Image (cartoon, rainbow, N blue to C red; front, side, top):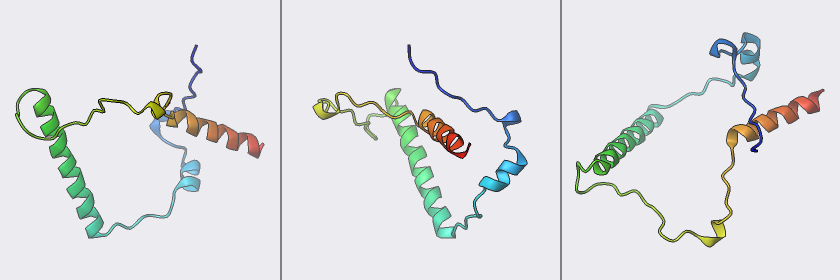
Length: 100
């Protein structure tokens, strides 16, 4: 059977105030150029997703094409993607064990 995953639930979806103060980083400043770049990329990606959905439904004859590899790389045959949530949980537990 697969290993059980650790799940950390916050009380009422919020962090305790004391913990929040310790973890919070200094406030980041974003320039207008940064915000403009983020907006541009976001809007462009939304367009691509809409066009992909349209082409999947047969609404459009042309548009973006989703790449699918026809001949998989044999070097990646045994590739297993990392479970990031599990990795972070292990890091968290290791940090707790080292502190005690």
